[in-house]
Structure formats: structure tokens, C-alpha cells
Image 1 (cartoon, rainbow, N blue to C red):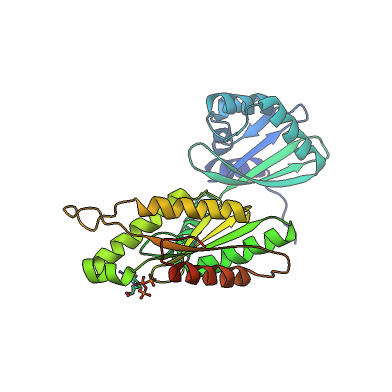
Image 2: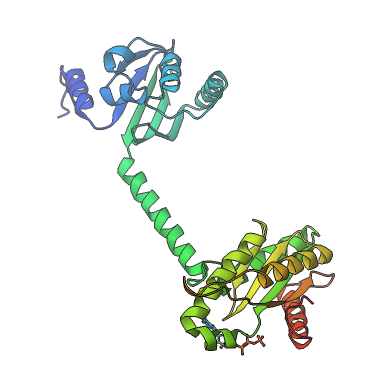
Amino acid sequence: MQKSTPANLEAILIEGIEISPNCLGVINSDKEVIYCNQHFASIFGTTVQNATGKKSADLLRNAWETKQGVIINTDNFEQWLANLHKLHSDKALNQYETDLTDGRWFKMTRINLDSGNTIIMGVDITELKNAQKALEDAHQHIENLVNTDQLTGVHNRRSYNQIAKQECARAIRFNQPLSLLVIDIDYFKAINDNYGHIGGDKILKEFAQTCDKLLRLSDSLSRIGGEEFTAILPMTSQDEAKLIAERIRAQIAQHPFYVSQTCKGINITISIGCSTLVEGDTSMNELFFRADKALYSAKNSGRNKVQ
Ligand SMILES: Nc1nc2c(ncn2[C@@H]2O[C@H](COP(=O)(O)OP(=O)(O)OP(=O)(O)O)[C@@H](O)[C@H]2O)c(=O)[nH]1
């Protein structure tokens, strides 16, 4: 036998809604809040008493002005509101996520009823969002670790391979210039012999950081071997690459490197092989091959040179 609806169902529902951690509100066809619980009112940064009977647009405007409740990132509130109305009136059911100035997140469901009333419900998804953010941060951290050379802090060989692939594909596709420098510290074995492996490491680190600062943000410096580095220079012609390489060579030659606080500045030099994308190249391997050959030639012609 079918049970009849209890006469006090409305009271039961309202009692449940009031103590629920979720939010619920009803808006009539005049866009006024006719019922809401405290969590719903808090979306506007206000109380149930204050929200009830008010137009939802005025409540949102107040939230935006006082920076309480829902975060509204706009300089032009009226334009933002017009866009929101359009978005919400297009469909009978809308779902979206919203965050509040107190750090909470709600997954909102908005149902436009045929009667002209709208029911808005929100589930608190703050914990889920925080877990998602922690996971994204951890992922970013791991990504940085696997792509960074631990000693110098610049890109490692793995990262070089990825960037090389991307930049080369982009340059070929859009017919843009692309250059590569292969940089090697001269007589690094002697540096290790004179200052020890730890001293050598300090020089490698300072060299990489100094060199990185001499490049543009769009360039990427990688350590691909012991004392061998590459610099990928997007949107850079052969002549520009030569100028950049020469500037790095000259700056490094006059930069004093310190392996301890008491020692005097050590001078090092570098040799650089330069190459630029030419018609027929299909990958960075071809540029690397030519730049590495040029580096070999720079070493053979006395070092401290750009070829
Ligand atoms: N301190 C330190 N030394 C390294 C590292 N990786 C490689 N090396 C050293 O770098 C030196 C490279 O020596 P070589 O390849 O003979 O070249 P070089 O002495 O720089 O001579 P040229 O390149 O011909 O000018 C070796 O002594 C390696 O042990 C590192 O991570 N730290």
C-alpha cells in the first residue's frame, strides 16, 4: 500500500535544509530570494534575514562591493551580471563551481522551473578542491624535479629534449627563425684538479645562473652533460645568435667565479658552437650536430671562441 505524504513534509524538509552543510535557495520570477538557508546567504556574505526578499542581483552587487562571499573578479560588475543572466537563462539546468572569499568552494546546480521560480542548490566541495590543489602542486613539483638539473637549477637533458622538439616543430610550422648554442667550459678538468670537485660544482652552478640571466625569458638554458650546456633561442636568426653567443662568451670571460669566501676570483672561459635552422632541417638533432661541430672547431682554434 502506498504511504501518503506526511502533512508536515514541508517542515521536515526545511529542518533538514537548515542544518545541511549544503546551500539551498529559491528565487522567484522577480529575481527575489524567497527562501534560503544560512549557507546560501553566506554566498552573498550576508544572513538569511538580510537575503530574504532581496533581489539576487543586489545581493551579488553587495558581495562584489564588500568583497564578502562569492569571489567576483571583474572591474565592470554590470557587464559581468548581464553575462551571468544570459548564461543562466539559456538553459533549464546549469551547473558550475563557485569559490568564496572564506576559502570554501560549492558545486552549484541551478534549476529554472516552468513556474518562473529558480531553485539553486550547492554542495560544499572545499575538501575536494583542496585535495585537487595539493595534487596539482605535487604534480608541478615532480614535473620541476624531473626537468631540472639538480646542481645548477637550469633545465636538464630530458627537458632540453622536450623543449627542442616543441620549439623546432613550431619554428618549422610557422617558418620562424630558431638558433641553438652548444656551450662548453674550457679546461674544466684543470678547474676540478685545482679546486676539487666541490669547487668545480660551485663554478658550474654559478656559470649556469650567470649565463641564464644573460638570456631572454623565452630562451632556455639546459645542462646536457658534465660541463656542456645548450641554449635554445626561439625567434633568433643566425646573426642575432652570434651576437648573443659573443655577449655570453665575453661576459663569462670577465666574470670572477668564487669557490670559497676567502679565495680570489677565478677566471674561466667558454667555447660556443652556434647553428640556425635551415631549409630541410626536420629536428633539433640537425642543429645540434652542426653546433657541436662548430664547438669542436672553436675548441681546436684555441678555445674562448664562438664559431
Ligand atoms: N665538478 C664537476 N666536474 C664535472 C662534472 N661533470 C663532469 N665534470 C668534469 O668535467 C671535466 C671535463 O673534462 P674534459 O672533457 O676533458 O674537458 P675539459 O677539461 O673541459 O677540456 P676542453 O673541453 O677540451 O676545453 C672532467 O674532468 C669531468 O670529471 C660535475 O658534475 N661536477
